[in-house]
Amino acid sequence: MDHSLVWNYTEYGGVKDIRIPPKLMWMPDLLLYNSANEAFDATFPANVIVKHDGSVSQIPPGIFKSTCNIDITWFPFDDQSCDLKFGTWTYHGFYINLSTIDTGVDISSFQDNGEWQLLGARAQRNVVVYECCPEPYIDITATIMLRRRTLYYFSNLIGPCVLIASMAVLGFNFPPDSGEKVTLEITVLMSLTFFMNMVSELQPPSSETPLIGTYFSCIMIMVASSVVCTIMILNYHHRLANTHSMPRWIAVIFLQWLPWILRMSRPGLKITKKTILLQNKMEQLEKGDRNSRSLLANVLDMDDDFIPSLTATKLREMCPPKGRNQGWMDVGGEADSYDSLSGLGQHGSPRSHSSPGGSERSQGGCNQDHPAVPGSIERELQCIRREISVVADKIRADAEAARIESEWKFAAMVLDRLCLLAFTGFTLVLSAAVLIAAPHVIVV
Image (cartoon, rainbow, N blue to C red; front, side, top):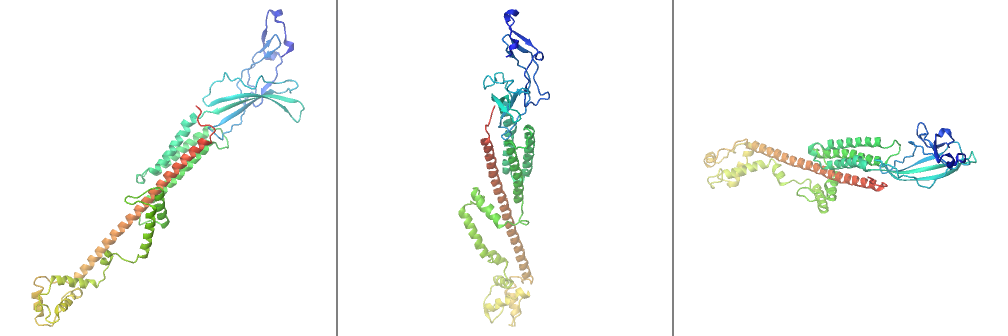
């Protein structure tokens, strides 16, 4: 209200209001205190409307840029409150008294924004008395409350991140023999690194870590850990019996207790707590009976003294006695005759006898039906025994190597299943924790 600008409109042809440039009259120096504009005063000097009753109205258009403290702790699920502080630059409260019509702000002409949703706006009159001056200084502070729309971030950042993390988890179902497990995990890690760079570009520069940054960092740590676990799984899967022996603690953990906990079983073998205890008991018994040999070992590792007796037995079958008077000895009986045959294994030829006509009876009784046994039969039997021993040892070694390799492969399967469940649970718990901790989830 300016009382010096009052006139009677009936005396001036019925003119009730006029427009005057602001430079031709006194105007309060109202400015935005927290302005970030280069010109500081971003308003256009529009004409002032003066009415006949002395009321002066000025509505200057302008684009205001102000400073605002942005809290990105919950980015992109964040709410922001920005203050616009208006006041006179040189006049204190005794000269200019600023006041508001009401505590609300007219937002009827607000245009929807694709990134922010306007929650509301309010105005507040503040009176501040500084220590330097006894006069009060009055300002009008308009607070604008905004909420970030998260649908864009869900569809472009969070959704792809969850899908990529699930691909890293599903990599544990990939067969180790395919040779692509490590390639898949490294590709997933590079994809997450790319998305992390996108998040860094979208969020305001700040030393504070936003919620989505924490989520991406945890997912990246999980994927990096999955690469390490995949390398360990491949190492277990491709171990051979001639290069690695399975320690006792690995066998107990990965072949007994973890398969029982994870409800895994090998083909033809169901792993339960009872079978684990029984297997441990059998291993203890095998340690106590390690010096005992099997029947096949007793046969293959027989002594050299058994060869002559075997030769004599074969010769008994080949040359059965034809009677007391037809044997090689007239005196001494069958036992003496067979004892003399046992010398074949050691000397390679039958022993000579002093009985008359012994050589003739020998030629006529045995050698007429069966040829003479060669002297190298002992060496041949020894070679056969060695060959059978080598073959048996090779079969036992191959069976033992196959058993050890299958145990390593099963341990790799158990570790694969354990990592699958662990990383799946970690991903689900982390995603749920982020969504629960956020002030709001989706704003379209």
